[in-house]
Length: 191
Image 1 (tube, helix red, strand yellow):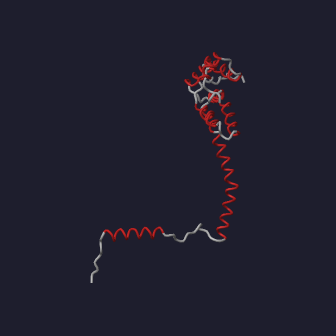
Image 2 (image 1 turned 30 degrees about the vertical axis):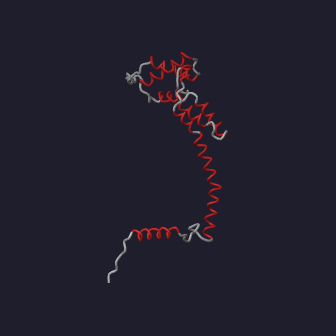
Image 3 (image 1 turned 60 degrees about the horizontal axis):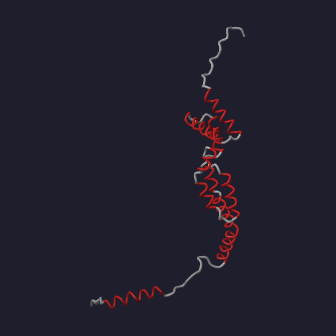
C-alpha cells in the first residue's frame, strides 16, 4: 500500500523549525585538537615562542618601519636626508610619534633648499655621479647636466671642497678633447 505524503504548509514549517532546533542543541565540544601530554607540550612551545621570538620580531619590524623615511630620503637624494635620519631616530625614542613627519618630509620637494643652494639633491648624489663619470658610465648630456648643476650651486653659495674639486675636474674635461692613442714609434735601428 502506497503511503500518501502530506505536503501541507503547516507540516513543512514544523519540519523546518524542528531541524533548526536540533542544529542549535549543544554538541560535545573540545578545546583543542591535542589532549593530555601533547597539549602541555604544545602549550609550552607556544609560550616560549611568544615570549622569545615575538618581541624580537616586533622590535625588528618597528625598527624597519621607522627607518623607511631615511631610506626614501637617501634614494631620492634629499638634501636634508641627515636631518630626516635624526628625526627617525628621535621617533624611535618617542615611540613613533614623529615618524609621520619624517615620512612626509622624505617625500617633499625642498624648494627652499633649491633657492638657497641651487639644487634639490644631497651632496652624496654628486659624489656618486663623479664616481660614474670617472668610470666612464655617463653620457655627454649627463655630464653637461652635472656640470650645470654644480655651476648653479656655485653661483648661489660656496661649494664644499670635494664638490669644488669635482667642478674643476669637469671644467677641465670640457676643454680637453679625447685624443686617439699614439701610434707606436718606429725605431730606426738605433737601440
